Length: 475
RNA sequence: GGCGGCAUAGCCAAGCGGGAAGGCAGAGGACUGCAAAUCCUUCAUCCUCGGUUCAAAUCCGAGUGCCGCCUCCA
Image 1 (tube, rainbow, N blue to C red):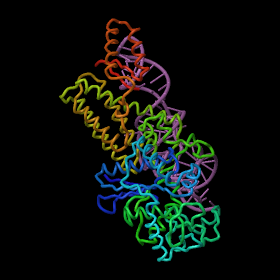
Image 2 (image 1 turned 90 degrees about the horizontal axis):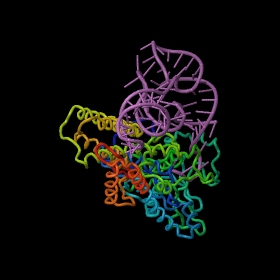
Image 3 (image 1 turned 120 degrees about the horizontal axis):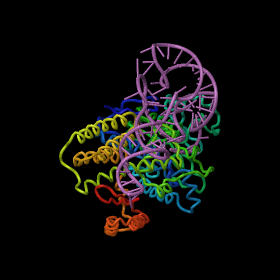
Image 4 (image 1 turned 135 degrees about the horizontal axis):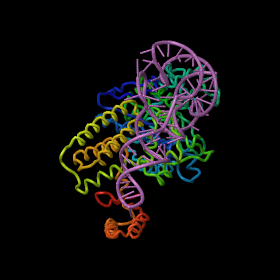
């Protein structure tokens, strides 16, 4: 079985073959750090990190690079607003980025390069393009001349002659072609700047990704990813710069995720409907948000709504209950070591479901189907648990292993680790109250029993009376 | 004007030529002191109209309706 990925460059699914055997280089366009990131930003961060998890599951050695754009108009404006240096704004929001990434259980990249830490590399890169005749300078600005790069438009399938018709692009008289873009931008008064052969200024937006991906992954690397809005012009321009300079293919596979809407509207400042991950994490566990983001294929549009996220919350609850129930049985030493036919049946189902999971992920990261396998096994296991007789320990363990390796490991969904967080009442107090309630129940004093249960519920503990004893559960 | 995507049950979402996955919600039943959890049962003429085919949600054509990019944007 082999992994297939949809490559924007060819507009089809291709079998993934890395450039260097088992080594894989991935570059994901990261955030401009001038604000908390929102649920839409989170989608690429999350899905491409799932790609990384999956590649590692498949025994690839991945080098994952994602940048922080720490200098541009938005950062500068924010700094002025806040009365801070642009670098202080960037530092702040990089810290905030990691806090939110942790909430969503987004693992760390191997390198987080920042534009301002690569100014001299950027200058050298532009000089290289200059020597090859791809640039022209106009009073302090340096432009890339798209007419010199014959493949321009190959990613977005735009034809230079035809896109001109759109004519919505702002006309800059100094440009030879409206689609020429700036490599080096002259500093305006009061703006931060760096010295360069073309005067004081700062890098254009597209150049940093070309420079930093080359530095950490080489002139050619495997996967370049980002939101679909980046296809044109950002990624198109990256290809132009990088391939013009190196003469080699830049990234082999280009992956783009679909957009996320909120309550069927585009997220925008004017509509005031920007939903930050910071806010969402106050109301929902990270795994619930992950479930929501993985519930549609990454290239499809996805709509956020309260109803949707609540559905994800309930879905995760089903899985959490199963994991919890198994742990409870194991803790109670309530299992057998013999394998009966039912146990064997579940083991076989488990293996089949693993195959389905892998098959789904191999098919361009079909996370909705991968998620469905988690529920398929939950169904089978619950059926097994609700049948008569002792359950086999190894079988129960193999089910737990599945959720650990695939649900948690590959999809990044955490189960018990989140639900078992300490509540506002100690384990000892809970046990004490359970004991009192059991006495009441034996005396058929239902009133007292229900009162105790109610008291615990108010502290976030639900009591479930099972055939195997009372089971406390945190809400 | 150019490039591209989508339309499957109340909601979400797979499927890409031959059984309409899975989740959430709902209904009925079982278990339970009551609950909870769980189990069982139930819930779709796949936007419309043509065509190709022994066979189409799946392919082709037309239509309708949504959406994205082409401008900072994940």
